[in-house]
Every structure is written in C-alpha cells, then in structure tokens.
Image (tube, rainbow, N blue to C red; front, side, top):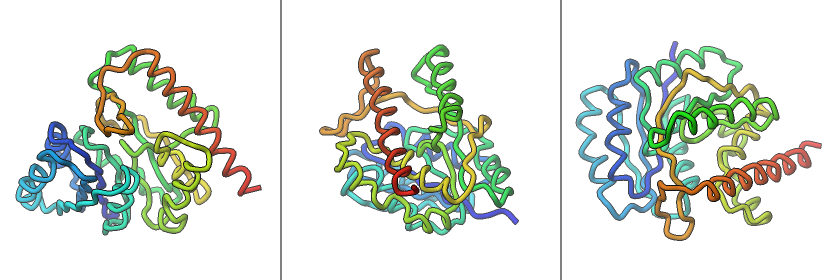
Length: 254
C-alpha cells in the first residue's frame, strides 16, 4: 500500500513562480495526497494565486492548503508545513521548482524500501547553461564521496515519523547563533539528524528544474545574476558551515 505524500512549499514573494510550481504538481502522473504552501510574509500576489488554484486541485482530489506565517525564515515556514501535514511522507520543494511529471511516482517507488529514511533528487538550473549544470551535478557525487551528502529542501522527501523522532530542526538556530552561520543550513542539519536513524539516498532520476539565485539576507530579495566571486564565496562558506555542523554532531555522538 502506497503511503500518503504531503508536499510542503515555503514561499516569500513568489508571484512569478508559484503558479508554475503548483501546476506541475497538478500534472503528476501519480497525485500527492496534499500540497501545503506556507507563506512567509509575502507582500505581492503569492497567496492570492495559491487561493485561486484550490478548485483546480480539488478537481484532481488533491488538498491544497495555504498557511500564513510572516515570522522567522524559510526554515520556520517549512517546519510549520511539516507540522500541519497529514501524510506519512514529506516531499519538499522550493517555490520556483518545476517537477518532472513522474516526480511523485518516483517518490512512491523509492519508499517501498522501508529501511529508507530520506531521498534527495537532482536539480537542473533553467537559468544556467549546460556547463554550469554539469559541474553542479558533479557536486552531488563529490559530497557522497566525502560523506557530506545531504537531502535538499528544493527536491527531497523523508519519513515524517523519523523527522518527529529526531525533533526536526530543533537546535539549529542555537547552533547558527553560536558559530555565526549566515546561511540557513537546514538541509544539512536535518540530514545529519535523519541519517542517525537510517539510510539517505541520492536519486539521480528524481528531477526538478530551479532558478539559480541568491537571497539577500537583509532585504530578502533574490538576485539572479551572480558573479563568479559571489559563487566562490558561497561555495567556500557552504563547505565551511558543513564542517562546523559535522563537527558538532561528531562531538555529541562521541
């Protein structure tokens, strides 16, 4: 028997992207049980667009649920969506993600394996060229090789029961403040918690397309044109923060 899949999507001023994201979920060959959008304080038409799609989802027997949480950050919004969900499997997307039509089917197929805790898929950036995407996808295998792999919030799925058993993202904000971690790092932190309970798997056939963009931490606006210098700084800090979080778990597991 297939387990119910709840798709959780945090949003913030995504009026240009959220409809496309949701319509991709409507066109899945196998339907999710529910789709949960948690708006993180949009001042544009994001919530209005989501509300207007509820009838279309109802026709496909999919629950489309919208929550408003204008506090904290994307991690808080995602956490609210997970807590509100009713499915056994949580599928995680970003608001600009476009899923392939077999995305839900692939998740169902992988979670037939009861020992599997979580899966992460492959992301292709539709605003970047083939060379950039090639190097980005090599990154998945390098992370696996160096034991730094994590499932990403923009394309992943995991068992809700295990998320609850490890207390989800609890402790992350304290860790970020202690070590002055500037980026969210919820993906890596959660992955380190989940992998203590079972297997995480990289699934190269679980595909979405995304936009490569960086968010300004102060204005919370996105920047699509990113310089090589900015990318290199981001890569360096991501690796450094991964090391800090890994060291934290090494210590508490010693």
